[in-house]
Image 1 (cartoon, one colour):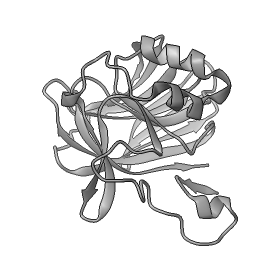
Image 2 (cartoon, helix red, strand yellow; image 1 turned 180 degrees about the horizontal axis):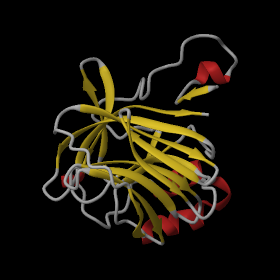
Image 3 (spheres, one colour; image 1 turned 180 degrees about the vertical axis):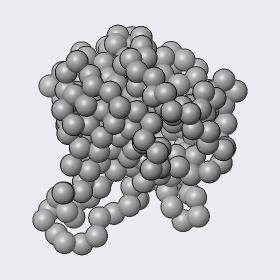
Image 4 (cartoon, one colour; image 1 turned 60 degrees about the vertical axis):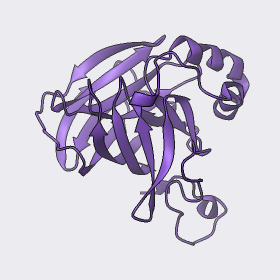
Length: 229
């Protein structure tokens, strides 16, 4: 199995050196360039010498357009940047961003460590996948308010829950956990740490870009995002 850690310029060049950590070199206190923010307030922070990505939903108002949208759309979908940018503006209901270095993802695994910090209405972490230039995408999320995971589909900015994981799992605030999902054709499997929380088959196999997804006023830290194929 080949492991594609994000932002691995040396590996892409054929070198054998160890891959660079996620967010390595990104300036602290700023929106990262390697993670393309399309909605919400995302900043790079230091956590004991490790760079993490912090989402503060309390600092973003639903409907607020992202900075430099035209250049971000061009970076993600250069052949249809204008169409994608228009779609983004029509669907600014949930905080989300995209990993620049993964242009296409189908079969494989996506995982990220998350730490729930706060949120008056939701304490939340989520992985985005299957994003295409029409702006539509899927999300696998954990919500400690409900104590479970679920699979969502976002079409034209409207969210629909297509599967409820059904496994109760309470996670304390302020502790790191790992959210992991596997895509095998149309089959989706999800875990929190080693506990399987979701198994579902979509109508068709999802493909597209990947990233992170949230909602409402959730405040969440993320680290060690990676894709395995």
